[in-house]
Image (cartoon, rainbow, N blue to C red; front, side):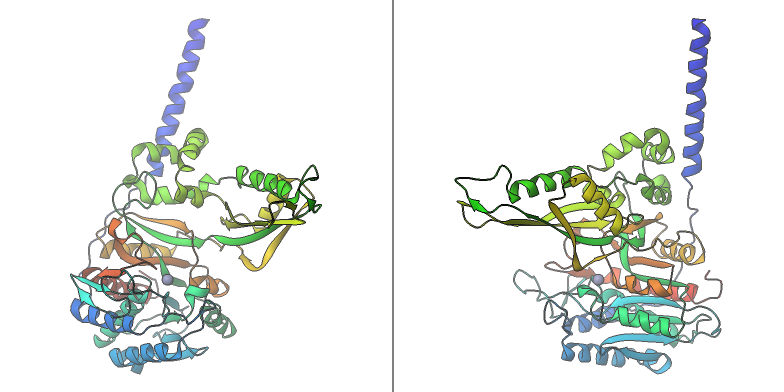
Length: 488
Ligand SMILES: [Zn+2]
């Protein structure tokens, strides 16, 4: 009897092990290597000089609302026209809302849905204090182009232009129409640039087969537990929601306080909010680890292939990493608190602000409902802050020709890194094209290591000349692949 039971247990264990291992083997799909391409000829020094000139056009907004500096944009537009004459002769160029640029490279088969490559012309401002080379001097030194915008994202803008000019020089003409969408106010939300461009395309009845905008890159340490470079393509963006919590209480003198003050009630609510975050959705990370494949250690492949069995351990491990935690749940951040000004007066009101970043799948209504439920106190008024919310973006597919060919080009140009989809934690201009495209990919074609940390929007922003040259190779290849009917 006991022996039979033992056999039964052993049998179940054996079957479970086989099931787990088979699932792992099926999960860790190897991405077969592709042949590297030779690519178009790129004169790295010339490209560097062009980027340096673009940096000197100081396209930082004049204020917090993103007011553009007309002179800086005039200079940049003139620089583009002079440096890329074939682009300006052979492509249609439209200025949208004063500063944004929309180029149309008409394909030989106008019935095909166009694709669009994006970058933004604006940069964030920079205080010259602490820079090795002044942020808007556009200096080239020690193998780098230095200055604001060299990583975010004039590098991409110039690469697109260089690639197109080079292909035009070779007599190339795409089958599929290629658009270049270059907004002018991405850093302040893109509502005057990219948004208007998106609306313009929609009015014209344009539907895009694919978009590539700035986003993920090629780097080590982009996902927990993974060693070695992986390329990440952003397939969605988290949503945004700022909520105000207000409590009106009994004002009075602190010598005779009410049992609960507005501050006390609010404090309890905030504490509950923080200790009851929105649930994790670990399966959202599955495509990421699936794409990374064998670059992830075996125990992670095993765990992600068998979330049903190891999910609980995996979750515990992943939530400790802030990036991974933010990649698998809607996050809650308490950011502002107000209430009371005198040490001996009970204030009539206390309020606080929380900022939520919504994982695709969670809606603004879900978060508000969740907050109401966990606070469970009608004295706390919950109000979304006007103009400070947007839903998470739809997830673009990580299958199909647009994604597959983008992934192939990355592997051709960058020595076969594993390519995987992920959800961007921040927002970009391409969010404004959701009404005209459902294959939106966010990828910056640059290999980045630890030394790049903090440079974007920071001091000493710079790009290696060799990295910049490779961006041109990448765009020329992408244009030739996405420019075909089959996108292969
Ligand atoms: Zn940017």
